[in-house]
Length: 505
Image (cartoon, rainbow, N blue to C red; front, side, top):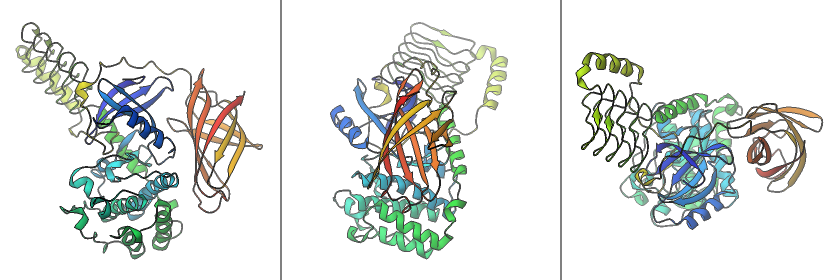
């Protein structure tokens, strides 16, 4: 799969997504299939266009490539779950929680609009919630289909118009109405002719902003995400008091997202690629690849490869490959491959089977929910069946990455360019580091893929540092995203992006 290793299959909504590993930068990535008619050149142009987006509330796009299975985008791996999966367990949010969640999305979208990038298909499915509760917007330029996608599409786009910043504003407002109402909205058959959603249960200041954002005439909507964000902030201050945001914690949503992701990666209902592969451990209803492969350990209803393969240990109803193969030990109703093969310890050792299976079932989670830990609504793609053979597991990461030494940083904001020299010190890999600048020290916190630091004072700004090159475990260059948390107080006109380069020890 290009220069990337695939680790486990994630079932997305209308797409194929693998959790992968980038051995060069030693980080997890998402390998996302794109439409079968999309060439790798088109995908690379998309990746290049989106490469300008580096923001804590946007799923970053790193690369594009093709192989025998199709064309793939390489994206940031988000340890979490899509918003619809989180809401299925937490259907009702407090109004301030809903506002804070959408505020995060709008902060990322404003970053995109400031750089001339339109999303085009915003919906709950394009919003990921990570394990800390941070919302991240993904799926830029993706295609939505059916009533589910049409629900969030503005009437002008549904009528054939081009997506722009104002149509993104409409879509975000539709998502916020759904979160504030606590009920799933129902799309009319003809989105261009549907009536505006009922705002009667929403507080007047917020409802007034939503009404403008949902106006049928795009000329009467806020011009872009920055304008909508400013109006929502003002309305929220009126409705909930100026300190409302400081009282909000989305940590419970992050915990729910982590639980959903953990269950998804446990492999309930997993399917390995036809041709070769292994379905996920603890799989229920798993199917290994046709021609070669192994269905999963502890699988219920597993089927091994047709042609050769082995059905899973302790499987119930397992079937080994036709032609050759072995049905699993302690299995019930197993069948070995037609032509040659074995049935190991089938129904003839019923007492042992019952005892073993009972113990396993007691250990398994009782829900068979199958939810992707990294999904956005994207284009229809090549199925997992066409993927290349499973790569070996990645080697354990070496001692790194870590920030250590002196770095020169140049950050570009809307109205200013700032250059600074900062020293970092860290004695351990992938952990917090000490920042020293202008005789002052602070801690930068490891977030799983890079480091974060919030700079206080009159201007409050959050910086996210993501490694882009590493030598002998030490970061040589990194990208920097600077997000202003106190708009209007920093004098640089808006959020900024930068590059840091190591200049010495």
